[in-house]
Length: 74
Image 1 (cartoon, rainbow, N blue to C red):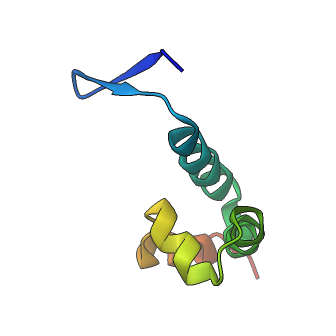
Image 2: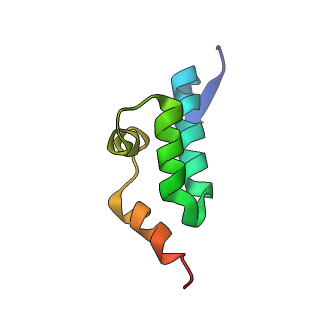
């Protein structure tokens, strides 16, 4: 993987690990009200022991997870 991604004017190598984390983050962000379910599915996909590990791995904050509950319409 010789390609570089430019982030903050600094070239960053695009490696499988970067792609894995980006994929997980995009899945979580696009899940909307299903974000908690997406987190559990990503946990299984990434072979993490707990959703907490996946949340930390993807850099998901408590407020991001809680905001998915705000989208629920009762």
